[in-house]
Amino acid sequence: MPLSVELARQLTEKQIAFVQRSGLKAEVLEPGFVRLRMPLAGNQNHIGSMYAGALFTLAEIPGGALFLTSFDVERFYPLVKEMNLRFRRPASGDIRVEARLSAAEITRLEDEAGRLGKAEYQLDLKLTDGAGEVVAESRGHYQLRLR
Image (cartoon, rainbow, N blue to C red; front, side, top):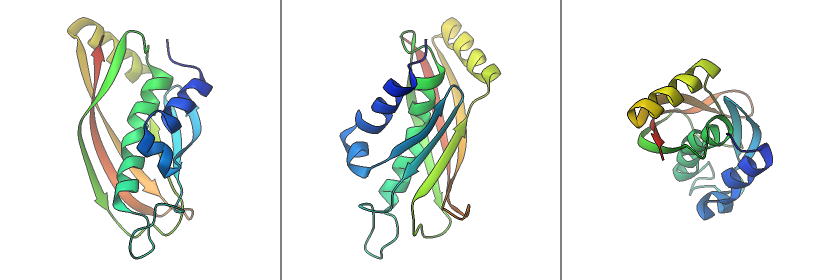
């Protein structure tokens, strides 16, 4: 069974010390949908825009947040197999990312992982600024594993 929203929020924002220090916030945590925000404050690079590592963190964490809100955490666990990030423009403010998995895809992944011990999926995400401009695009390859 997926975790409660409050427990998923706590784990998303505070379980990993690096993420907690970054100030990342889980704005929406629902089965099949998450929206996260990385603040610019405290995450600036040498020219005042957002540090690449903060953007990478914002691109990677949705996979875990989706797992916590969408999958049976007692039966499965997620792994990141590969992550790519393409920078489009400097991020000069807080940055958001949204990630989705349909109910049908969640069911398919749980069924496949239950039968085969693992199931793979991909998340293609856009990191956007306050004006909706894309500052980076990511592609993450994930694996759902049976415990």
